[in-house]
Each structure stands twice: as C-alpha cells, then as structure tokens.
Amino acid sequence: MKKTISLLLALIPSVLLSQSFTTYFADKTMRVDYHHTGTKGAETVALDKVYEEGPWPGSRTRLVDNLNLGEYVMRVYDVASASLIYSRGFSSIFNEWQSTGEALAGTFRTFHETVRFPFPKHPVQVTISRRDRQMIFHEVFSTVIDPNSPTQVNRQRRTAQYQSKKILDNGAPQSKVDLLIIGDGYAKADMAKFNKDAQHFADALFSISPFKERKKEFNVWIIEVESNESGIDKPDKNEWKENALGTMYNTFGSARYVLTEENRVLRDIAGNVPYDALTILCNDNRYGGGGIYNLYTTCYTQVDTKGQEWQMDYVFVHELGHSFAGLGDEYYSSQISYVDFYQKGVEPWEPNITALNDPATIKWKSFIAPGTSLPTPWAKVSYDSLEALRGKLDRLAPDYYEKREPLYQQAMKLLRDPAHTGKVGAYEGAGYVSKGLYRPSLDCRMFSLSLVGFDPVCSSAINRVIDSYTK
Image 1 (spheres, rainbow, N blue to C red):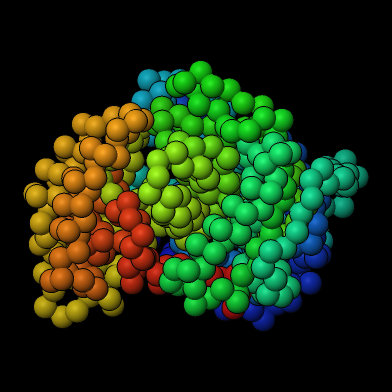
Image 2 (image 1 turned 30 degrees about the vertical axis):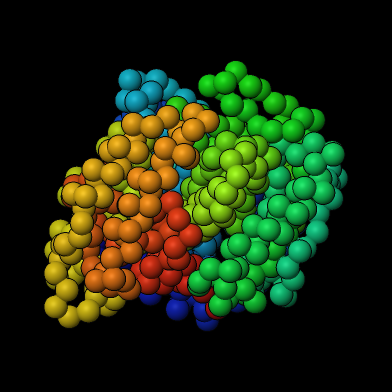
C-alpha cells in the first residue's frame, strides 16, 4: 500500500507539467503562519496569520513534491476542482523537540512555524500531514484560505529594515536556487565582518561537490540584519544578548545546538528578498550550528583556538546538508538530547540512512558494486573505543582541542582505510545509534568532523533537490 501511494505521488508532477502555473497562481508568495503545540505523542496545529509577500521564488513547473523527504508534508488543493496544485515536504523544531526528555516528561510547548507556496488565485485548502512511526502520512491540520478575502489575508507592505543585496547572480529566481544568508549577533560595527563572513561561507559551499559543479544554478542573497549587541545567547553561561533574530546555544540542552524560536521575526525580515533556502550566520565563538529540513541552517563564525577555523566550514556545509537536502546525521557517538529519534526496524525517510531491513532492496542499491557485503565490515570496534575516550573530554574546556587531537588523528586514519575509499555499502552506525542503522560510506561530510566531501549517495540526494528548483 505504501509503495502504491509513493508511486502515485511520483507520477503527479508529470501531469502538472501540462498545466500552466498561471492557471492556479499569481506571481506572488502566500505565507501561512501557525502555532504548533503539544507534547510527546500529541500535537495540535492552529492557524495564526496569512500574508501576501513578494514574487514567488520557486519553480513554476515542479509544483508537486516527489522527493518524499521530511517529517511533514504541506499540500495545497484547489477548492473548486479538488486538484492537488502544490506540495512540499519539511521538518520542524517541534518534531525534534518531541524526541527530547522534556517532551517525554509530558511538558507541553508551542512553536511558531511557517509554510510558503505560490499565491493562489482562487480559494484553496491547505493541509499539513505528518508521518507516523511507520512512515505513513496522516493529516494533522486543514484550513481553507480565500486569497481574495479582504480580511483573511494580510497584504500590508513592510518597509525593509535592513539593506539587502545579491552576492551571486545567475539569473531569475524561478529557475535558480535562491540561497539567503542572514546574520544574527552582528552589531552595526560588525557589518563589514558579516559581509566578509557571508562571502566566505558562500565560497566554502561552492568549493565542495556537488555544489561546486552546480554553482551557476544558484543565486545568493544577503540581508545585513543589525543587532543591538554582538554575539548570541549562551544560557548555560548566563550570557544573554540583544540579538535581532533570537538565535541561541543550548537548544534542547545541547551546548552546541543553535536555533531560534523567533520565527515571525525571521520570516518578516527574510520575506524582503526571494529565497528558497535560508541560513543564519551567528556572530559568536562557540562551536555550534543547526539545520532542519526546509527550515534553516545556523553556523558560528568566530574561532578562538588557532588552527580550528576549518571547523566553521565543516559546520556550515554539514548543516546545509540537513536543511537543504534532508540528509540525516550519520554520526552516532556524539552527545545528543534526543530519545529514540528513529523507530527501531523502520526505514528512515532520510536518503542516507537505512535500517537495512532487506539488503536486496536497499535504497542506494544502484551505488553498490556487485559482491559488496551488506552489512559492510569496517574497523568499528577500534573507532568506537577512540570515540569513547573523546566523549569523556569537556568540549568547552580550554585544552579540549589539545587533548582531542591524538584521538582525532587515530580515528581519521581508520576512516581513510584505502580498502573502503569510494566504496558504497552499508556501514553500521548512523542516526545517533551504534546498532541497527547504517550509512552508505565509511566517511562523509554527514559523518565525521572533517572537510571530507559528500559520498555518492548524499551527492545524488543534493542533486535531486537542486533539480527540483531548477529543472
């Protein structure tokens, strides 16, 4: 049944290609804000506000999403014909929070969220569905929006508070991926640094495959968001900054996880330019960042320890792998705040993680050479012993890098095993667990803290997403 549904969804885009974008949509953007409330095992979605924003930046032909990525899917139906006219998969802060101990204890919380789609000409039904633990979608929200209503849609034009500009211009937004870089924790005196940082991280992104080969299919915008203070919040240090976007460390209790819950503020600012993907540079010095599929990426931009500057580039590209391409974390030995993030024995939706329930039908089968053992043997016991020693070190201690270095070098040597170089298989250890989940390659930008590139499976997934915006 699940395979039948997936096949039907995959066929929908070819039908829509024969229909004109202008049949259903105007060249504007509809932004729908809502409140997402719940606890472990329970959630409620309530409409907040609907906005009319600037020109639609996305594809005019690939209106229905066939990537099958994300914890949720948003669908838009034309009310008069009941036709599915737009859809997009995504994940959220809320679904990540539901996997924390706080939610497990029964605490209720509310997060503000947004979905965006081309501005409809006629009334539409907007639904949000979520996967259950078996990966089947179930509707959790539905509302009807009349775009011509004088009261239902907020059409107020917001004066741009901050200067914006394009630092990479390859053409019209509708046929390109428009990446927007915004800064947080940059005071007025830091704005030259923000411009330099934005260019640096854009260059870092387009220095790695497959982004390097497809640079001409991207536009990059920046908005010079000015905060009243330099830096972002560090709750565990009782350091609080008056930063414009509200980004902070210690998300879900993790010292290095950086997110913001100020969604409305973020969207009001971002809406002043066309964007498909959004990233926030944080003007602070603690190693950290974050990335959620079709939400945003965050990354720190200062380094106190000489010789560790490369780690910022690692974080930026790694987190963009999450937010842009829906790639899962392949590492499993770092401290996290999630509890049972993946259901045992159920195939994850992320394209680079598998439960290997059936080796004969593994989802990256086309990349595996004949005769490759599944699971694929590797020096896991030795690697895990090194990671256990590293895990005992205090990451925030001044001598952390000095103590970590010999362990790191030994681990990297294991991951550079020539016998596995370029070999796709099923290597056990992925998705925050040591047993039962597998990754495609021995090493990848989604696995180790290094400047290694994306493996073939991850690269293919990234290319598919780029195609969805540009083909």
